[in-house]
Amino acid sequence: MADRELHDSDLLDEIEMYGELVIAASTCEGRLPAARIDAILGVGPAERSTSG
Figure (cartoon, rainbow, N blue to C red):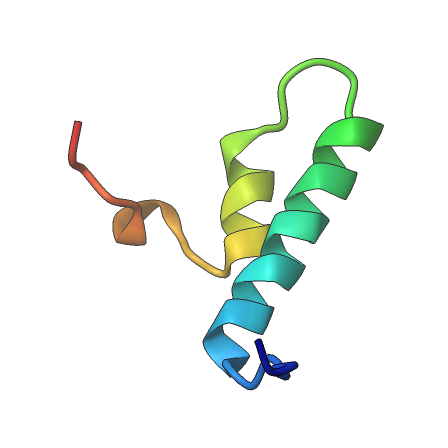
């Protein structure tokens, strides 16, 4: 199997956001507020998915 480099910038962005969420959650006492999650993900309340 050949060595492959990761070139997918979208995937890298998602990994970075996940890391930011983990860090924020680990430093927060209690639940991480939805507004903070939205800020990390770069979305606002109107942009959240309404599926459920």
